Structure formats: C-alpha cells, structure tokens
Length: 267
Ligand SMILES: [Ca+2]
Ligand SMILES: [Ca+2]
Ligand SMILES: [Ca+2]
Image (cartoon, rainbow, N blue to C red; front, side):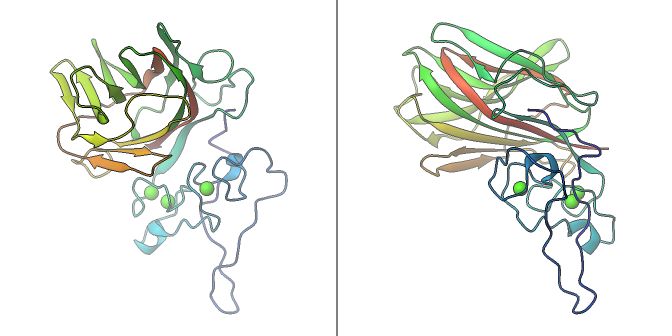
C-alpha cells in the first residue's frame, strides 16, 4: 500500500514531560492503523521510520543542531542534523491490491510487487521526488532460474538508463561472490566482493540501501545486507548514484517479491 507523505501523522517532535524534562513515551495517534512493516508498533502510515524499528520515534537530531525537526526519525534520517528531509515514496508489499498513488510521486503497475519470471524480466516503474537522498529496498527471492539473474532498482538518467542498485550473480565470478553493480554511460562499475549465497534461491532476502551525494555533498554509499545470514557490506568508492526521480524495479530470470521500496528526499 502507498502511504501519504503529508498529513499522515508522522511526528516532527518529541514530547517532553515538563515535570522532569524526560521524553514522554509517544503513542500512535488515534485512527492510525494498518500494517507495521518494522514491527515497532507504529503503523507504517504514521511511523517516522517505516522500515527501521524505532518505537521511541525520536526525531531529535535537528533540534540538537539548532534546527527544526523535520519529521524523519533519527533512526532513518539520511541527514539527521539537517532539516528539510521527508519520506517521499513508500511502497509496501503487504497490500496485495492494486497500487495506490499519492501526492505527485507514484509507482505504476497492477497487483503486488512480485516481479520477474524464470525466463525474463518483470518491472514496475516509479516516480520519486526530484531531490532523492536515499533509496531503501528489501526483497525476497521467490524462485530463480540457473541463468544469469539480477534484480534491482534502475533509474532513467538522461539518455542512458543507469542501474542504481543491483545484486547480481555472474558467470565468471567465483562461487558465492556477489557484487553490487552500477551501469551508466561511462561503463559498468562494481562494489567490492561480497560473500553471499551460492546463487539466487528461494527464501533469500536482501536489503540494499543507497545514499546519494545529497546526504553529505560528496559521498555516496551503497550498503547490501543478506537478511538471512546478516552479512552486510558497504561501499562508497566508485559507485555513482545519479540524481534521479524515476526508474523501475526489476526482477530478471528470478521471481522477486519487493517487500518494500522507500525513497527519502530533501525539500
Ligand atoms: Ca519505525
Ligand atoms: Ca529528522
Ligand atoms: Ca534531517
């Protein structure tokens, strides 16, 4: 299901008990119901970090830096000490119905985000806010072929499609070695080697988080986590995350459930 950005009750402040100055424990606002992706008892629609458990909903980083809290919780805020962040696009797989659109940012398609087949690709396109700072997605492999497979997040970056995030199993790579790949008009680049599963197989879960240069001004970072084994690797060396606001999610020769797809952006 899609979640509204504005007016959905995400909190931009913490409640301080005037008696002792302690932070009062917050409760989800009345009427905020529905799926809770990260299991922190805050329904996705009013969770200020919908895919990171943060039951305290702390959004203190900007305040501590003398700025105004922006409604993105400290646990997931790409720029925790800078104001102006917002959660731009949230697509949760836990709604099997048709996609719902909200605001100007959308993801088009029908049905749930189960993409790809054993013989070919399947994709769903999206439109994000124009000043994206972070993309965060987790997906599960439902089934796969024995051929080259990939899944990931692609962006349309001018005349060339740029692959933003990819976890790929490639002929020629030693068994169990994975890389995150970026394709652009200047060629393909890869992250450092990742020790992962032998190949794509049912039940594997991966999380890929990518930060753009908007987070720090220069640095870009990709983090890949095997959510079954806990293996995680980050790279900030060669990968160039383009400035984008559209693209598509894809599974290729693998059937992939995108459990969620979240973009963060800055005003
Ligand atoms: Ca949360
Ligand atoms: Ca914040
Ligand atoms: Ca912030």
